[in-house]
Length: 239
Image: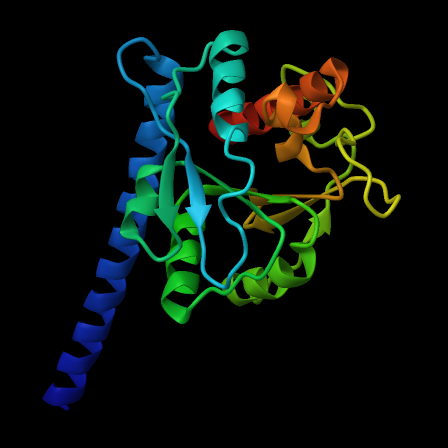
């Protein structure tokens, strides 16, 4: 009987410790968010690019994040570090960055340890923006299903707050590049009422953030893409 009681106490203690660790990570991310908006002149907060395995080009669109950061700092008054970080899917450093951006055209593979890390990061208050650079869809969906087997991507309605921050997009995502003549769609993973992953599909939002010389998009197209990106940043740090 005493052995059973000791085992129960240990199990309860372990569960309590795990809940405490998750809660402390959540608090850390909330503190980082406060730093961004409460003291932009005194401290800079970095956003990060997710580096993943599987062979896909996680490094696509190298000028997109610097341009988005500059646009947000100039137009929203954010205090984002002009240099973004790169973080691996299994790294504990992920918890230093409240916002992760993921892109690419090809294969994605998350190991069991990476699945656990990403899930814990997102549940703890982090946010993942996935931008399909054309060809990512069939790879990312099963990998995110490993992260959240209980959730499905749902298309966000046009009246969702992510489309109506500083800039309003009554018809949802702007279309940057044509591929299969499909309308752009914004999907989300919603956990306990919170949008923690936003997936932009058939949109090429990141291409629109790139330097004008890269894709030679019109100024209007690039501006709409940057405005939508700014909405995402603002939504993440204010929700």
